[in-house]
Image 1 (cartoon, rainbow, N blue to C red):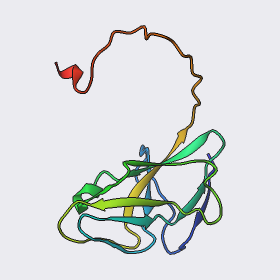
Image 2 (image 1 turned 90 degrees about the vertical axis):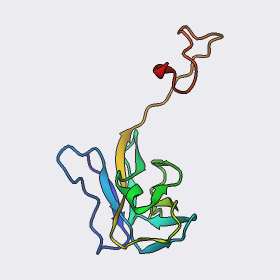
Image 3 (image 1 turned 60 degrees about the horizontal axis):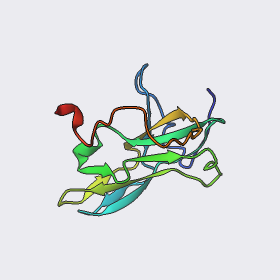
Length: 142
């Protein structure tokens, strides 16, 4: 699948799948950012992306990011297909949950992207659901 991509800083590598079966590709911090304790910071990811019709870009934290003392503040990010202009650089917002500043270095792999097929729901409103009610959180553990 061909995807149009623009790098804002050509010194930073293109996103890359690090293994043959990787679902996501790594995205890099375009600049160094120090995140103060208990605060948020936006980290530019150095790319504008145009996904093909019927797809979107899903942004997620790398699995090791929490080891730095930060987590992606909004959990995930969804890049709509129409967020693909020349200046539409993706960024990720991270929260520093530690008591010390955390440094994200320029060129550091800080997020992952996945190209995901988009489906639209066709709502069928009903007055009652046909399945048994399971309950709330943790119901499979009872």
